[in-house]
Length: 305
Image (tube, rainbow, N blue to C red):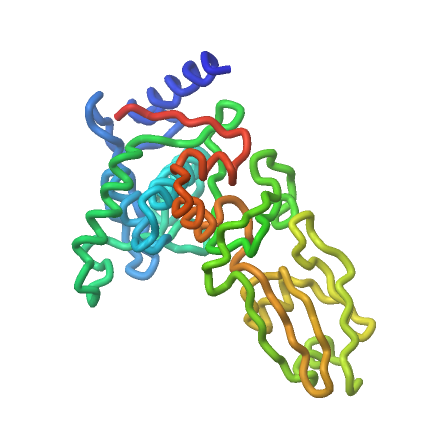
């Protein structure tokens, strides 16, 4: 298996560093340089060119708190790099032929170093820390079955990650539910809010005076899928959106005038749990151990630029 990964990895390196059709790099680098990528800035409606590793610096800065432990930042850097490469190899369409976008609705977040935390007096030190994390994993990506993975990640899983199939459909072996004991420090690990019963009933157009709520189905990771409110079924994702909940991992407790909703986690819950990664780093785990936990069965490959 290791020999096969070396062979596929060598092919990937040729594709990436040679600018061949399979990778769609705009500038043909030398053996010692790294690829250039075209990034679409959606708010400015323009495309800029930059080195791939500089893009990873901006993505890590935008996606993970720089106050996190170094090993967590390294894990995020490998995720961001793998995610970007997968997008480019899939030729995901972005405006003006760009390779990537900074629109989080379709790609990863990005912030340029000049715009990073301008009001923070420690911004230079934090940027140096991020650059160190990126440089120490330079060119490193994750493979599964000799292919770059969809390195999805979320802020806080709430105690268990989710399967990709439960969120988007289609089984992905390395994106299955994983127990996580390390994200409890997140403010989103467990949250409680109270919503007026009239608001709950209004979601399904019910004229009843008291809501009767039942979770009809849950995902393998424990998140709600379909919810019955007074005989009318609503998707948990719709409920989350309308009520502004942090996730669909929710429980209900109906009171006289309000309904208490307890939610766990923040986001879709698939892949790397960022707060979990930081918790593991605090326990002395390195970035490879972190990534192997959240993406079971992956292997590491360095592109060598």
